[in-house]
Each structure stands twice: as structure tokens, then as C-alpha cells.
Length: 308
Image (cartoon, rainbow, N blue to C red; front, side, top):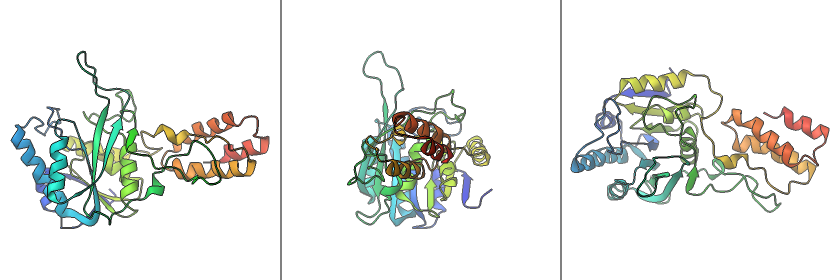
């Protein structure tokens, strides 16, 4: 196994206590929501005060372990997110962003509105001094303008990614598997190549798998040996692109009418927006050829076909 990628089977709080102070650059994690999910080895139905105490303990350890310029992202359901927000704040973290993960399918309800989102809290250890690589996570512009930053726009705090459905070949036998595209954005934004990323509740191994293919180091902890093996299998699998992508990454800007500018942009688009999504490149190239079909000559079409 790659020594930069460390899978640890054990209790999250006990394993966190073993890590040195100020030793990781980024924490991204999806802890239990206390909704009675079946995680095999984890009790996801604690008494209210027990769950708060459990949450307070792992958050305190994360604060100790995180470097002074580090960031923490925490997935959380609506039932406890206000408590987690207050704990992060009381521990000393600084609030930065409340991210909404919007998905198109979710739990059906017959009385009340069906949920279609989860939330992700982004806090930093220092109020102003923290890593944020905007260029790494931009999304394509709708229109080409010479005055625009064609490197793309800020993706905003509403992220649309589909669930990894059970019919998806990359779906794992885990009840709350998150899309790799979510972790890709957090990891690219808030860490640099070679940095150490920590996931105290590693689950099926989404975080560590994304770190593997973005040149980060990772520590992933889970108390279920079956999930540790699941994560190892993902690390050993062939990689052809992450299992999810923001649909905006396929956006072909309007008004790319100049041939030379269009060819340069299409080449850059693949490098900027589809770097970890080799399986999405062909669709983008076909979208370009379709959109500008009356302007593209044979030479340009051959140029586009050769891009990868």
C-alpha cells in the first residue's frame, strides 16, 4: 500500500488521541448523524446527551490536531447541525461557509416536503490565514468575454451532485456513501499537493480515494474492518475518473466565435475542469462540436478529437 495513504481500523476518538498536535492540513469528514443507520460496528442511535458528548470529544481532538492554517469540513444532517455549528465555534474554529449539497433524489414523504439536500459546515482554525485555492475549483463561464476570467467562476455554496445510486458500478455496500466530486472540491480548495488530509469517519473510503488521485497524503479512520477492506479495494482499483461531477463542468461558453480563441479555450477547459474526469472528456468534446458545428472546419475537428 502507498505509505502516504494510511487506513486505520479503530475507534475514532481513541485513534485521534494518538495523532500529534498541529499535524494535519485539512479535515474532511462525514460523521454519524445519530439517525439509527446500520454501520455494522457503530451505534448510530445514542441518547441525545451522549451524542453531543461524543461529538464534542472528536471535535476537540480535531482542533488540537489541525494546523493553524487548516480547515475542517463536516457533513451533518438537519437534526444536529445547529449543535455541531455551536461546538465548532465554541472550540475555537472560525465559521467560513455553510455549503448545501443539493441532490435530485432523496427520501420520499407523504406528509411534508421530501428532503433534497445535506449540509456541509466549513470552519477554519485561523480567521484569515488559511488555504483556499479558488483556481482549482472554478466552474466554466456561461459566456466568452475577453474581459472575463475564462479560468472560471466561484462554484458558490450550493453544490449539485447526484447520489451514488445503487445501480452505479462504483456504489459500495455502505449506507451513506458520498460522491467523490464533493470531496474532490473540498480537498482541492483547502489543501495542496503533499498535504495531509484526515477523515476520522472514513466509511467506504471516499476521502482517501480522492486524496490518492489528487496527490495528497491521507489518514482515514473507521471502526469497521469491513469498511477498511472496502476502502483498500477502492485504492487498489483502476482509476478512470471520479464517480461524480458538477454538471457545470460540461458547460461550453457561448460566443466562442473566434477560431483560435475557441481552440485554445477547448484545450484549456479539459485541463482546468476535467483533470480528474477522463471519462467525461468525450462528452465535452461532442458538446463543443455540436454547439459550434457551423463554425468548426475539418482541421479544428481533428484538433478537438486529439485532445485528452
